[in-house]
Amino acid sequence: MERLIIIGSGPAGVSASLYAVRAGIKTTVVSTGAGALEKTDKIENYYGFPEKISGKELYERGIAGAKRLGVEFLTDEVVSVEKSDVFRVKTPNQILEADAVIIATGVSKLAPEIEGLEKFEGKGVSYCAICDGFFFRNKKVAVLGTGENALNEINELKNITSDITLLTNGDELTADFPKDISIISDEIECLDGDGKISEVSFKTGQRLSIDGLFIAYKTAGSTAIAKKLGAKTDGKFILTDDEMKTNVKGLFAAGDCRGGLLQISKSVYDGAIAGTSAVKYLKK
Picture 1 (cartoon, one colour):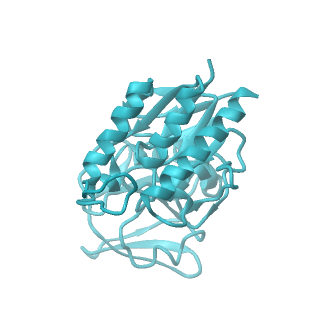
Picture 2 (cartoon, one colour):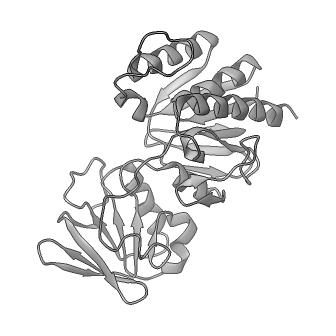
């Protein structure tokens, strides 16, 4: 049986799962929860609801409907996706295999507000160790993060350099990091450099000289996952055609991660198209 993994359990992901499972595809949705929808207090402009409904209730109804049709839901954090003969979706607890993947994780904030961060993007600041790590072979790098996403980036970078420092920016660690990794827990003041990043300044007055900084803040964002697979992006959004196809065969994207109108109705539409497009791809 063909296997589809959908990353994200919001309106786009659940909508896609409905079309896939009804077509006989083994469909698994992986997510850490409802995300932004759960934080929405009242929704009053959505078709079919004459009274206000909370984002939490709408989310739970969507999940219940998909489960009734046979969609499998896993609560786990996706830290990366790789592709060879099949897609391999990696979480801290397991590696899942699929014949196609739909990214429907919405838009996530990938980094805290730090002076100089945007200035040095592409000039020593990267969001993808697999994509850009080879530029920093045997050089001094730092990773900004505290959880499984940061740990995954560090493990990638350890194949390239032994000089890695983890920066937590004052946040608590949420993963178990190797003991040979240096950790600086001070809050970051700014990033400095002449044309490219060369130094991190901390609010304590401490300074760290680096050649590169990899952002792995909180959970892996949609664009970071897409970039690691070679998918084209535009800023923080994933580029697709009208059928929600990316430039990577078997990889689709739906919902807020594509940009445009950031509304539930648009996400549901995107999901429907992504789901049917994935079915066509898998049935060929």
